[in-house]
Length: 446
Image (tube, rainbow, N blue to C red):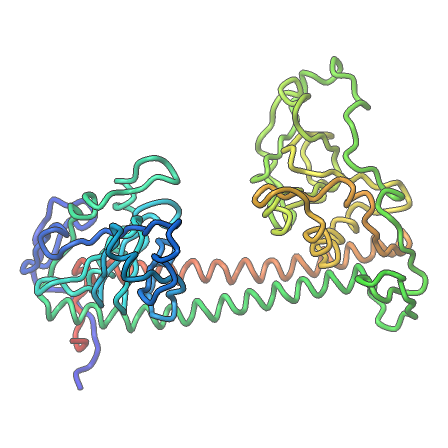
Protein backbone atom coordinates (compact mmCIF):
# COMPACT_ATOMS: atom_id res chain seq x y z
CA UNK A 1 0.00 0.00 0.00
CA UNK A 2 1.31 3.42 -0.95
CA UNK A 3 2.05 5.64 2.00
CA UNK A 4 -0.23 8.63 2.47
CA UNK A 5 1.84 11.79 2.09
CA UNK A 6 1.54 15.39 0.95
CA UNK A 7 4.07 17.48 -0.97
CA UNK A 8 4.25 20.40 -3.39
CA UNK A 9 3.78 20.16 -7.15
CA UNK A 10 6.89 20.80 -9.22
CA UNK A 11 5.63 23.77 -11.20
CA UNK A 12 2.83 26.32 -10.87
CA UNK A 13 1.21 28.90 -13.12
CA UNK A 14 -0.51 32.19 -12.27
CA UNK A 15 -4.28 32.64 -12.66
CA UNK A 16 -6.60 35.63 -12.93
CA UNK A 17 -8.85 34.38 -10.10
CA UNK A 18 -8.48 36.21 -6.77
CA UNK A 19 -9.03 33.30 -4.41
CA UNK A 20 -6.50 31.01 -6.14
CA UNK A 21 -3.76 33.16 -7.65
CA UNK A 22 -1.75 30.16 -8.79
CA UNK A 23 -2.42 26.52 -9.70
CA UNK A 24 -0.30 23.49 -10.55
CA UNK A 25 0.87 23.96 -14.13
CA UNK A 26 -1.22 21.09 -15.52
CA UNK A 27 -4.49 22.14 -13.77
CA UNK A 28 -7.06 24.44 -15.35
CA UNK A 29 -9.57 26.90 -13.99
CA UNK A 30 -13.10 26.60 -15.31
CA UNK A 31 -16.57 27.90 -14.60
CA UNK A 32 -19.10 25.54 -13.04
CA UNK A 33 -21.22 25.62 -16.20
CA UNK A 34 -18.27 24.25 -18.21
CA UNK A 35 -17.76 21.13 -16.09
CA UNK A 36 -21.24 20.16 -14.86
CA UNK A 37 -24.95 20.89 -15.22
CA UNK A 38 -26.92 22.72 -12.56
CA UNK A 39 -30.43 21.84 -11.45
CA UNK A 40 -32.57 24.33 -9.53
CA UNK A 41 -35.25 23.19 -7.11
CA UNK A 42 -38.84 24.21 -6.48
CA UNK A 43 -41.74 23.79 -4.06
CA UNK A 44 -45.01 22.04 -4.91
CA UNK A 45 -48.21 23.94 -4.05
CA UNK A 46 -48.54 23.58 -0.28
CA UNK A 47 -52.32 23.94 -0.48
CA UNK A 48 -52.65 20.69 -2.44
CA UNK A 49 -52.52 17.71 -0.07
CA UNK A 50 -52.09 15.31 -2.99
CA UNK A 51 -48.63 16.80 -3.64
CA UNK A 52 -47.26 15.98 -0.20
CA UNK A 53 -46.46 13.00 2.09
CA UNK A 54 -45.42 10.75 -0.78
CA UNK A 55 -42.19 8.80 -1.05
CA UNK A 56 -39.92 11.26 -2.88
CA UNK A 57 -37.47 13.02 -0.51
CA UNK A 58 -37.67 16.83 -0.74
CA UNK A 59 -34.99 18.97 0.90
CA UNK A 60 -35.32 22.56 2.12
CA UNK A 61 -32.18 24.68 2.08
CA UNK A 62 -31.84 24.27 5.85
CA UNK A 63 -30.61 20.73 5.20
CA UNK A 64 -27.54 22.09 3.40
CA UNK A 65 -25.05 22.51 6.23
CA UNK A 66 -21.54 22.03 4.76
CA UNK A 67 -21.77 18.31 5.37
CA UNK A 68 -22.79 15.01 3.84
CA UNK A 69 -26.57 14.61 3.50
CA UNK A 70 -27.70 11.03 4.04
CA UNK A 71 -31.11 9.51 3.39
CA UNK A 72 -31.92 9.46 7.12
CA UNK A 73 -31.67 13.27 7.08
CA UNK A 74 -34.74 13.59 4.84
CA UNK A 75 -37.95 14.24 6.76
CA UNK A 76 -40.18 15.87 4.12
CA UNK A 77 -41.56 13.99 1.11
CA UNK A 78 -43.60 14.79 -1.99
CA UNK A 79 -45.64 12.68 -4.41
CA UNK A 80 -45.15 12.00 -8.12
CA UNK A 81 -47.95 14.52 -8.75
CA UNK A 82 -46.09 17.12 -6.71
CA UNK A 83 -42.94 16.46 -8.71
CA UNK A 84 -44.71 16.73 -12.08
CA UNK A 85 -46.59 19.90 -11.20
CA UNK A 86 -43.80 22.01 -9.71
CA UNK A 87 -40.42 23.41 -10.67
CA UNK A 88 -38.52 20.95 -8.49
CA UNK A 89 -36.42 18.29 -10.19
CA UNK A 90 -34.94 14.95 -9.22
CA UNK A 91 -31.30 15.33 -8.25
CA UNK A 92 -29.18 12.30 -9.09
CA UNK A 93 -26.88 10.71 -6.56
CA UNK A 94 -24.23 11.72 -5.80
CA UNK A 95 -24.50 15.48 -6.23
CA UNK A 96 -23.04 18.65 -4.75
CA UNK A 97 -25.63 21.14 -3.45
CA UNK A 98 -25.43 24.85 -2.73
CA UNK A 99 -27.94 26.89 -0.72
CA UNK A 100 -28.90 30.15 -2.40
CA UNK A 101 -30.71 32.28 0.16
CA UNK A 102 -31.11 33.36 3.76
CA UNK A 103 -29.05 32.14 6.71
CA UNK A 104 -27.76 29.12 4.79
CA UNK A 105 -26.65 31.09 1.71
CA UNK A 106 -23.35 29.65 0.35
CA UNK A 107 -23.63 26.47 2.45
CA UNK A 108 -22.55 23.37 0.55
CA UNK A 109 -23.87 19.82 0.83
CA UNK A 110 -23.03 16.40 -0.61
CA UNK A 111 -26.14 14.42 -1.51
CA UNK A 112 -25.83 10.63 -1.24
CA UNK A 113 -29.32 9.66 -2.45
CA UNK A 114 -31.80 10.75 -5.11
CA UNK A 115 -33.97 13.62 -3.91
CA UNK A 116 -35.68 16.90 -4.82
CA UNK A 117 -35.01 20.26 -3.24
CA UNK A 118 -36.70 23.63 -2.89
CA UNK A 119 -36.04 26.73 -4.96
CA UNK A 120 -33.30 27.86 -2.59
CA UNK A 121 -31.07 24.94 -3.57
CA UNK A 122 -29.07 24.25 -6.73
CA UNK A 123 -27.72 20.75 -7.40
CA UNK A 124 -24.66 19.81 -9.45
CA UNK A 125 -24.40 16.13 -10.35
CA UNK A 126 -20.91 16.03 -11.83
CA UNK A 127 -19.63 14.78 -15.19
CA UNK A 128 -16.68 13.02 -16.77
CA UNK A 129 -14.74 16.20 -16.02
CA UNK A 130 -15.92 16.77 -12.46
CA UNK A 131 -16.44 14.46 -9.46
CA UNK A 132 -19.26 15.65 -7.17
CA UNK A 133 -17.26 14.93 -4.01
CA UNK A 134 -14.35 17.06 -5.25
CA UNK A 135 -16.81 19.80 -6.22
CA UNK A 136 -18.31 19.60 -2.71
CA UNK A 137 -14.93 20.46 -1.23
CA UNK A 138 -13.90 22.96 -3.92
CA UNK A 139 -17.04 25.02 -3.29
CA UNK A 140 -16.57 24.89 0.48
CA UNK A 141 -13.19 26.52 0.03
CA UNK A 142 -14.69 29.66 -1.54
CA UNK A 143 -17.70 30.40 0.65
CA UNK A 144 -16.51 33.96 1.24
CA UNK A 145 -16.15 34.57 -2.50
CA UNK A 146 -19.61 33.12 -3.13
CA UNK A 147 -21.10 35.54 -0.62
CA UNK A 148 -19.68 38.48 -2.59
CA UNK A 149 -22.48 37.77 -5.09
CA UNK A 150 -25.16 37.99 -2.40
CA UNK A 151 -27.80 40.68 -2.83
CA UNK A 152 -30.65 41.75 -0.58
CA UNK A 153 -28.85 41.77 2.78
CA UNK A 154 -28.81 38.97 5.36
CA UNK A 155 -32.01 37.41 4.02
CA UNK A 156 -31.02 37.90 0.39
CA UNK A 157 -29.08 35.45 -1.69
CA UNK A 158 -27.36 34.40 -4.87
CA UNK A 159 -28.82 33.04 -8.10
CA UNK A 160 -28.36 29.87 -10.11
CA UNK A 161 -26.62 32.05 -12.71
CA UNK A 162 -24.11 33.18 -10.06
CA UNK A 163 -23.35 29.54 -9.33
CA UNK A 164 -22.88 28.66 -13.01
CA UNK A 165 -20.26 31.38 -13.44
CA UNK A 166 -18.16 30.53 -10.38
CA UNK A 167 -14.57 29.61 -11.16
CA UNK A 168 -13.11 26.45 -9.61
CA UNK A 169 -9.71 24.74 -9.96
CA UNK A 170 -9.94 21.63 -12.13
CA UNK A 171 -7.32 18.87 -11.80
CA UNK A 172 -7.71 15.62 -13.73
CA UNK A 173 -10.31 13.09 -12.45
CA UNK A 174 -7.70 10.87 -10.78
CA UNK A 175 -6.35 13.82 -8.82
CA UNK A 176 -9.91 14.91 -7.96
CA UNK A 177 -10.54 11.45 -6.49
CA UNK A 178 -7.29 11.54 -4.52
CA UNK A 179 -8.08 15.01 -3.16
CA UNK A 180 -11.64 14.00 -2.22
CA UNK A 181 -10.39 10.87 -0.43
CA UNK A 182 -7.68 12.84 1.36
CA UNK A 183 -10.17 15.46 2.52
CA UNK A 184 -12.67 12.80 3.62
CA UNK A 185 -9.91 11.35 5.81
CA UNK A 186 -8.67 14.69 7.16
CA UNK A 187 -12.04 16.35 7.77
CA UNK A 188 -13.46 13.26 9.47
CA UNK A 189 -10.53 13.23 11.90
CA UNK A 190 -10.98 16.94 12.62
CA UNK A 191 -14.76 16.61 12.91
CA UNK A 192 -14.34 13.85 15.51
CA UNK A 193 -12.03 16.11 17.52
CA UNK A 194 -14.53 18.96 17.26
CA UNK A 195 -17.39 16.69 18.35
CA UNK A 196 -15.38 15.58 21.38
CA UNK A 197 -14.57 19.17 22.30
CA UNK A 198 -18.24 20.16 21.97
CA UNK A 199 -19.22 17.25 24.23
CA UNK A 200 -16.70 18.45 26.83
CA UNK A 201 -18.15 21.95 26.62
CA UNK A 202 -21.70 20.65 27.09
CA UNK A 203 -20.67 18.66 30.18
CA UNK A 204 -19.09 21.77 31.67
CA UNK A 205 -22.27 23.75 30.97
CA UNK A 206 -24.28 21.04 32.71
CA UNK A 207 -21.90 21.17 35.69
CA UNK A 208 -22.26 24.96 35.79
CA UNK A 209 -26.04 24.63 35.88
CA UNK A 210 -25.94 21.99 38.63
CA UNK A 211 -23.72 24.21 40.77
CA UNK A 212 -26.13 27.14 40.43
CA UNK A 213 -29.28 25.07 40.97
CA UNK A 214 -27.95 23.44 44.12
CA UNK A 215 -26.50 26.60 45.65
CA UNK A 216 -29.62 28.78 45.30
CA UNK A 217 -32.06 26.08 46.47
CA UNK A 218 -30.02 23.97 48.93
CA UNK A 219 -27.21 26.25 50.05
CA UNK A 220 -23.56 25.34 50.50
CA UNK A 221 -23.84 23.14 53.59
CA UNK A 222 -24.63 19.55 52.53
CA UNK A 223 -25.45 18.67 56.17
CA UNK A 224 -28.02 21.45 56.67
CA UNK A 225 -31.35 20.33 58.13
CA UNK A 226 -34.02 20.56 55.43
CA UNK A 227 -37.74 21.37 55.36
CA UNK A 228 -40.48 21.21 52.77
CA UNK A 229 -40.69 24.57 51.00
CA UNK A 230 -44.39 24.09 50.31
CA UNK A 231 -43.71 24.70 46.60
CA UNK A 232 -43.74 21.67 44.33
CA UNK A 233 -41.10 22.89 41.90
CA UNK A 234 -38.78 24.10 44.67
CA UNK A 235 -38.86 21.01 46.88
CA UNK A 236 -36.93 20.93 50.14
CA UNK A 237 -34.85 23.90 51.30
CA UNK A 238 -32.65 24.47 54.38
CA UNK A 239 -34.78 24.76 57.54
CA UNK A 240 -33.56 28.26 58.35
CA UNK A 241 -34.40 29.64 54.86
CA UNK A 242 -37.59 31.49 53.93
CA UNK A 243 -39.69 31.55 50.79
CA UNK A 244 -40.56 35.05 49.61
CA UNK A 245 -42.18 36.58 46.57
CA UNK A 246 -39.72 38.82 44.77
CA UNK A 247 -41.98 41.88 45.11
CA UNK A 248 -41.58 41.63 48.91
CA UNK A 249 -37.79 41.91 48.79
CA UNK A 250 -37.09 43.99 45.66
CA UNK A 251 -38.44 46.71 43.39
CA UNK A 252 -39.24 45.71 39.83
CA UNK A 253 -38.79 48.09 36.88
CA UNK A 254 -38.01 51.14 39.02
CA UNK A 255 -38.78 54.52 37.49
CA UNK A 256 -36.25 57.24 36.74
CA UNK A 257 -38.23 59.82 38.72
CA UNK A 258 -35.53 59.83 41.39
CA UNK A 259 -33.73 62.20 38.99
CA UNK A 260 -34.85 65.49 37.52
CA UNK A 261 -34.36 65.56 33.77
CA UNK A 262 -32.88 69.06 33.79
CA UNK A 263 -30.20 67.97 36.28
CA UNK A 264 -28.95 65.00 34.25
CA UNK A 265 -29.90 65.66 30.60
CA UNK A 266 -26.33 66.47 29.51
CA UNK A 267 -24.68 63.51 31.24
CA UNK A 268 -23.33 60.70 29.09
CA UNK A 269 -24.40 57.30 30.40
CA UNK A 270 -24.09 53.69 29.28
CA UNK A 271 -26.66 52.35 26.85
CA UNK A 272 -27.14 48.57 26.78
CA UNK A 273 -28.73 47.16 23.65
CA UNK A 274 -29.71 43.50 23.87
CA UNK A 275 -26.54 42.50 22.01
CA UNK A 276 -24.48 44.36 24.63
CA UNK A 277 -25.43 41.78 27.26
CA UNK A 278 -24.00 38.27 27.10
CA UNK A 279 -25.52 34.97 28.20
CA UNK A 280 -23.01 34.66 31.05
CA UNK A 281 -23.58 38.07 32.57
CA UNK A 282 -20.97 40.20 30.81
CA UNK A 283 -21.89 43.68 29.58
CA UNK A 284 -20.37 45.92 26.92
CA UNK A 285 -20.05 49.45 28.33
CA UNK A 286 -18.70 50.96 25.12
CA UNK A 287 -21.90 52.66 23.94
CA UNK A 288 -22.52 55.90 25.81
CA UNK A 289 -25.09 58.56 24.97
CA UNK A 290 -26.44 61.78 26.46
CA UNK A 291 -29.36 61.25 28.84
CA UNK A 292 -31.40 63.64 26.67
CA UNK A 293 -31.40 61.02 23.90
CA UNK A 294 -32.46 58.18 26.20
CA UNK A 295 -34.88 59.68 28.69
CA UNK A 296 -37.97 58.55 26.83
CA UNK A 297 -38.58 55.14 25.30
CA UNK A 298 -35.89 53.03 26.98
CA UNK A 299 -35.46 50.92 30.12
CA UNK A 300 -33.86 52.75 33.04
CA UNK A 301 -31.51 51.06 35.52
CA UNK A 302 -28.89 51.89 38.12
CA UNK A 303 -25.49 50.42 38.86
CA UNK A 304 -25.82 47.11 40.78
CA UNK A 305 -29.36 46.46 39.52
CA UNK A 306 -30.10 43.11 37.91
CA UNK A 307 -31.44 43.12 34.36
CA UNK A 308 -33.29 40.18 32.78
CA UNK A 309 -34.15 39.81 29.10
CA UNK A 310 -37.91 39.41 28.81
CA UNK A 311 -38.36 38.40 25.15
CA UNK A 312 -37.87 35.03 23.45
CA UNK A 313 -35.30 33.61 22.72
CA UNK A 314 -33.13 35.99 24.76
CA UNK A 315 -34.77 34.97 28.05
CA UNK A 316 -34.39 31.24 27.38
CA UNK A 317 -30.76 31.82 26.36
CA UNK A 318 -30.05 33.46 29.72
CA UNK A 319 -29.37 37.04 28.66
CA UNK A 320 -29.10 39.17 31.76
CA UNK A 321 -26.57 40.70 34.13
CA UNK A 322 -25.77 42.05 37.57
CA UNK A 323 -24.76 45.61 36.76
CA UNK A 324 -21.92 45.94 39.23
CA UNK A 325 -19.54 46.78 36.37
CA UNK A 326 -21.75 49.48 34.81
CA UNK A 327 -19.49 52.43 33.98
CA UNK A 328 -22.04 55.09 34.89
CA UNK A 329 -24.15 55.50 38.02
CA UNK A 330 -27.25 54.85 35.97
CA UNK A 331 -28.01 54.01 32.39
CA UNK A 332 -30.60 52.96 29.86
CA UNK A 333 -31.13 49.96 27.66
CA UNK A 334 -33.45 47.96 25.46
CA UNK A 335 -37.12 48.01 26.34
CA UNK A 336 -36.89 44.20 26.36
CA UNK A 337 -35.23 44.17 29.80
CA UNK A 338 -36.84 43.82 33.22
CA UNK A 339 -34.92 45.48 36.05
CA UNK A 340 -34.70 44.28 39.65
CA UNK A 341 -33.36 46.36 42.56
CA UNK A 342 -33.12 44.59 45.91
CA UNK A 343 -34.33 45.95 49.25
CA UNK A 344 -31.40 46.60 51.56
CA UNK A 345 -30.72 43.75 54.02
CA UNK A 346 -33.42 41.60 52.44
CA UNK A 347 -31.99 40.52 49.10
CA UNK A 348 -28.50 40.70 47.65
CA UNK A 349 -28.51 41.66 43.96
CA UNK A 350 -25.55 39.41 43.18
CA UNK A 351 -27.32 36.45 44.79
CA UNK A 352 -30.51 37.17 42.87
CA UNK A 353 -28.59 37.33 39.60
CA UNK A 354 -27.55 33.71 40.17
CA UNK A 355 -31.16 32.82 40.97
CA UNK A 356 -32.12 34.10 37.52
CA UNK A 357 -29.68 31.57 36.04
CA UNK A 358 -31.22 28.63 37.89
CA UNK A 359 -33.52 26.06 36.29
CA UNK A 360 -36.21 27.05 38.79
CA UNK A 361 -36.35 30.61 37.43
CA UNK A 362 -35.62 29.86 33.77
CA UNK A 363 -38.01 26.96 33.25
CA UNK A 364 -40.89 28.41 35.24
CA UNK A 365 -40.42 31.75 33.48
CA UNK A 366 -40.45 30.05 30.08
CA UNK A 367 -43.63 28.18 30.96
CA UNK A 368 -45.37 31.44 31.91
CA UNK A 369 -44.34 33.47 28.85
CA UNK A 370 -47.20 35.20 27.08
CA UNK A 371 -47.70 36.47 23.53
CA UNK A 372 -47.55 35.06 20.04
CA UNK A 373 -44.81 32.82 18.68
CA UNK A 374 -41.58 34.75 18.15
CA UNK A 375 -42.84 37.60 20.34
CA UNK A 376 -43.35 35.78 23.65
CA UNK A 377 -42.29 37.64 26.77
CA UNK A 378 -41.84 37.07 30.49
CA UNK A 379 -44.42 39.31 32.11
CA UNK A 380 -43.81 41.81 34.88
CA UNK A 381 -46.32 39.88 36.98
CA UNK A 382 -44.25 36.71 36.76
CA UNK A 383 -41.18 38.55 38.03
CA UNK A 384 -43.15 40.27 40.81
CA UNK A 385 -44.75 37.08 42.08
CA UNK A 386 -41.81 34.72 41.61
CA UNK A 387 -41.13 32.77 44.81
CA UNK A 388 -37.49 32.36 45.74
CA UNK A 389 -35.68 30.49 48.49
CA UNK A 390 -34.04 33.08 50.73
CA UNK A 391 -31.29 32.59 53.31
CA UNK A 392 -29.96 35.41 55.47
CA UNK A 393 -28.27 38.30 53.68
CA UNK A 394 -24.84 37.11 54.85
CA UNK A 395 -25.48 33.62 53.50
CA UNK A 396 -26.74 35.10 50.23
CA UNK A 397 -23.45 36.99 49.85
CA UNK A 398 -21.49 33.85 50.69
CA UNK A 399 -23.40 31.83 48.06
CA UNK A 400 -23.05 34.58 45.46
CA UNK A 401 -19.29 34.79 45.98
CA UNK A 402 -18.95 31.01 45.81
CA UNK A 403 -20.92 30.85 42.56
CA UNK A 404 -18.96 33.74 41.10
CA UNK A 405 -15.73 31.85 41.72
CA UNK A 406 -17.03 28.48 40.50
CA UNK A 407 -18.80 29.76 37.39
CA UNK A 408 -15.80 31.93 36.47
CA UNK A 409 -13.55 28.85 36.52
CA UNK A 410 -16.02 26.82 34.47
CA UNK A 411 -16.61 29.70 32.04
CA UNK A 412 -12.86 29.98 31.44
CA UNK A 413 -12.63 26.25 30.76
CA UNK A 414 -15.52 26.54 28.29
CA UNK A 415 -13.87 29.57 26.67
CA UNK A 416 -10.61 27.61 26.27
CA UNK A 417 -12.45 24.71 24.64
CA UNK A 418 -14.33 27.05 22.31
CA UNK A 419 -10.99 28.59 21.27
CA UNK A 420 -9.69 25.08 20.53
CA UNK A 421 -12.80 24.37 18.45
CA UNK A 422 -12.25 27.59 16.47
CA UNK A 423 -8.67 26.56 15.75
CA UNK A 424 -9.80 23.11 14.60
CA UNK A 425 -12.45 24.67 12.36
CA UNK A 426 -9.83 26.99 10.88
CA UNK A 427 -7.49 24.02 10.35
CA UNK A 428 -10.31 22.23 8.52
CA UNK A 429 -10.74 25.21 6.18
CA UNK A 430 -7.00 25.38 5.54
CA UNK A 431 -6.81 21.64 4.75
CA UNK A 432 -9.61 21.99 2.20
CA UNK A 433 -8.25 25.16 0.63
CA UNK A 434 -4.70 23.82 0.27
CA UNK A 435 -5.87 20.58 -1.32
CA UNK A 436 -8.38 21.97 -3.84
CA UNK A 437 -6.07 24.76 -4.98
CA UNK A 438 -3.03 22.52 -5.39
CA UNK A 439 -1.02 24.15 -2.62
CA UNK A 440 -0.30 20.57 -1.61
CA UNK A 441 -0.11 17.39 -3.67
CA UNK A 442 -1.75 14.39 -2.03
CA UNK A 443 -0.16 11.01 -2.58
CA UNK A 444 -1.53 7.53 -1.97
CA UNK A 445 -5.23 8.46 -1.74
CA UNK A 446 -6.48 7.61 -5.26
